[in-house]
Image (cartoon, rainbow, N blue to C red; front, side, top):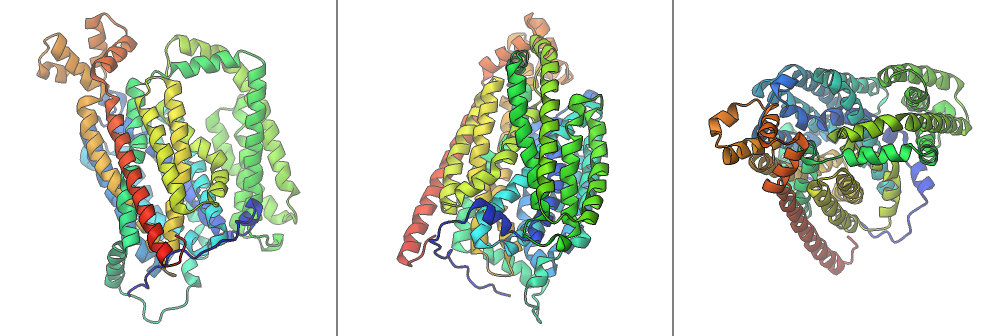
Length: 620
């Protein structure tokens, strides 16, 4: 069935409504699918942030010991499966229903996580990654298609901002969980993610499929017609050229998550971050001030989840859906359980185990009481804020001596914790950025975000010290918030009615192009010019006349130590020597230049559309 041609966004010269008004304009389905996305992303990023480290981990340390080239090939295929497939699954989601596709996706993702946990051969691990990617590709259009179908233009910018923020709530918690579990056993990371994504089965009975709102078509398109429509729609000029010019940005973007963890693990000395925190926490003022600020933010998060979960569309309490009470219960669970480890002897893992129990009890109690107004949400926020502030102050002060000792021993911040600053900043500021960007055209915001993110990626990738890398990640995150959510908003404005899932699938095409090309390029380049163990082998052959075969035979986990012994250096001294000799950071200069080229292409695309729309009397 041929789709009507998309039109340029209509002129809407009226100023955006207030942030509160835009939030109230979002209906209950918006919050249900956003919660499903949050759980899916919690599981996904729990694996995604640590799997680059796991892939190249030596067999002695429990990993599959793949090469960076093999890692790049896996990521390239992962990119193709996860980012190209939505172009087709989006059309089928519109045709057969968003709910059915989400259910199928959950099953595939569970199987994929379990295969990644148990199979360490290249082929077996590859297959697990492909199932996970396929499940993600099927999951996304169903969720994002519902959002595109239910969002009104007056609240679209804030709506997509909230979506991106809740995605990163999961993205923020996932790496923390993975960072703890991988210290016990790497398999626990994958097993836990399979369990977390299965939680979304609980939401399906309460999820009204947005495709049911569309007028019934007595002659629905055949699967072949859906496929043809999916392909031809991509070649509409506005969609096609947008995908091409935006792909360079996504090449750079994905390497922040695929390559930067290895770069941090190999080359960044993050002991300066630990030293700064140890000195700051040794004072009395810093722990109190920082705990008060973070406690206020945490209380605000607990309040927001409570209020938004049950009051998104201002329904009477008796009409609030059951999933909304589960969201409210989650807020109570967050407020009560996450601060527990900071001022009790309860470990973080036991706190996480208590979270679903307390959340479920709170959800049932709230559903029975059905509070008619929102003061209870303020109470949840106050409890969470006070408990969080007290717990954090005690935790910060008690950790000072150990932090100082860790810095003196030269211990490092795990890469996933540094990268988690990305999700953390987005969690606490995305709604603000979404509101801010509601005053500008989507393409203007995308262009500004590309520029900021390129600067941040270059700073993070070329800095050899923890503070420089952290600041780069935060700058990159600000650019991401300006650009990434707006691509979905922009494509939603181009989608004909009934094809929202299809056009949300197109949002993944520039991701696919950039991710595939970047994975192959970065995998090959880092294998020869960036990997610390391989560069240590090179130095052994160049300086000590060790044959290439003998150097290659040294176990990966021992090669740096053997080089340190020959040089009479510490491992940290070897790291600095290798860095200054071979300049592994040069790869990030090339990646940043690709981001600049993409930004110039987007500028030209924007100028051309302005001219076309200006002649047609439209605002693009």
